[in-house]
Length: 338
Ligand code: ATP
Ligand code: MG
Ligand code: FE
Image (tube, rainbow, N blue to C red; front, side):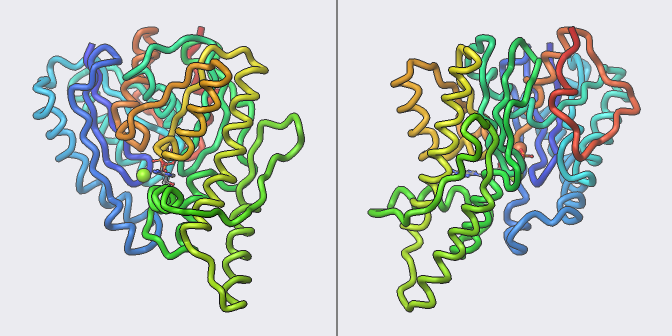
């Protein structure tokens, strides 16, 4: 089974061809980071236009790289939500055109289901598992009871983890996207600026990062006004420790409460070295198997979309040809049907 998948939900134009939901034959990712860096963040209209310019080229490159011919494909998959509506539309139109021309089934995929099932490209999953989803737009604990059946047990009440990273990075005058820069600075730091942790109610699996972001801004301002500016490394380390403590603690508590067999890490912030190290240490102590994708499969890519699409392909659950792009598509609603 050869699935061609298209991902254009944000600022990466990506096309992959994956065999049997597991073997990546091509996973071409064209990032627009350099363009958006000029503005300090993703500009939706600019993103859509760049997807339009790139998508045909990237599709051709995926065929060339994989050596797969169009006639060999079994299905066309595409991220149809959530994400920037104009950006999603470009991928959806491209995928529909391909599916139509090649008379292939179409499979709409939820972007976060893709981030979660990126793990299946490299690991053996055991159900039920718990997933800590940490990305640019999402911070969620997702309980996956059986294959493709999702239940969100906790989520952020304000900023996503990646969003907080990017905002704090901006305050530290680091380039966009700031996550990797803060990660690097945090490792160089000899000390940490003390910052609060948002635990919320004792039994809650929800998260909140906007208070932490404000605390960083106010610490920076206060120190600057005193004429003793804080070292960016110390701020980065304090911030990273605060985020990581809460994520690790709640994820491990959720694993235990739900009797999950594994803890999966997913989304762009899963590339964070501090978070990975803290989770590894905690999981090792608790005897919980921790799975995370390699760095290249943590951030947006189409191979993860093909992996999620494969769940529906095997069940013959295809999308109608009038599949819509939905900017706030719900994960639970995308679950496979029994
Ligand atoms: P979503 O998946 O929620 O729609 P997105 O697709 O924009 O959002 P991803 O591509 O999954 O987000 O992740 C991008 C985010 O990951 C950015 O906020 C970026 O700063 C963050 N990120 C990437 N690498 C690291 C890192 N090493 N440490 C912390 N954050 C990181
Ligand atoms: Mg991106
Ligand atoms: Fe993403």
